[in-house]
Amino acid sequence: MRKQIAAGNWKMNLDAEQAQGLVSEVMGIFQDEINNQAEVIFGAPAIFLATVQHLAKDHPQFHVAAQNIHQEAKGAFTGDISANMVASVGVTHVIIGHSERRQYYGEDNALLEKKLRIALDHGLTPIYCLGEVLSDRESGNTFDVVSQQLSEATFGLNAEDFGKLVIAYEPVWAIGTGKTASPEQAQEVHAYLRGMIRQQFGEGIADNTSILYGGSVKPGNAVELFGCPDIDGGLVGGASMKSADFTAIIKALN
Ligand code: PGA
Image (cartoon, rainbow, N blue to C red; front, side):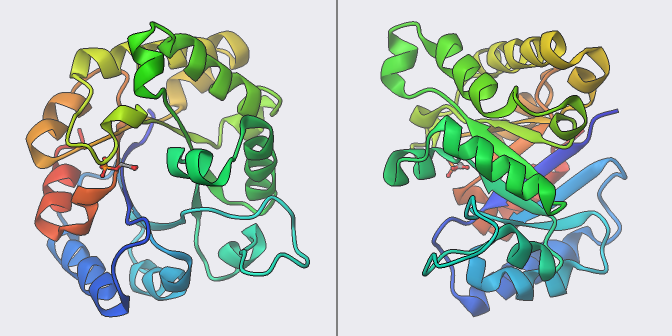
């Protein structure tokens, strides 16, 4: 059975007090309530990772993700953080290949493969993001684009390593725009991605890979999205920073 996951991505938002307040509120509501299969992940800015990890550490269903890591193990890379640093404070997940990293920092599939490998080498679970921009969708290229993003960055991994990934389909035109892919649009891409995974790595791995949807997930659309057979939860930006909204989204996991 693959995991159902609600992952928040705070991006470059919140200060220390707000971050701690948010985590405490969400965890307070959920101590005993969420079902055993569900996993909640806080995608915190690097500077808050240790604090948030400390708050979450005694609660097996709550996890913390870095939003990025460097592709090298260590060295003279002023301002960057390594997979080892992230793992050394007890953080278990890392978001890799978010469209904002692709767009503003020029991260391409070859670089992202390196980041996936270094994350896996340090025992981190990567949440690998992919998705088409509006012009790709309008010109009918969605499947070509996501297929390239998936295969170029992940199909060089062996099956055991691929099996450790979480995939997040995030149509770029739906991120932070208030426009959500319809459940049918999202399900179609998720099923396509799972089909590719099945072909490359086999039935067992395809069945066990959690594929999250991201792009304006809100309490009002989460139930319908998460109800689709190939959607295993969400990667949530804006709504993950409001405790009431994020907890409603967690409750929508099935
Ligand atoms: P959004 O962001 O929920 O604010 O659209 C999603 C994401 O960027 O992961």
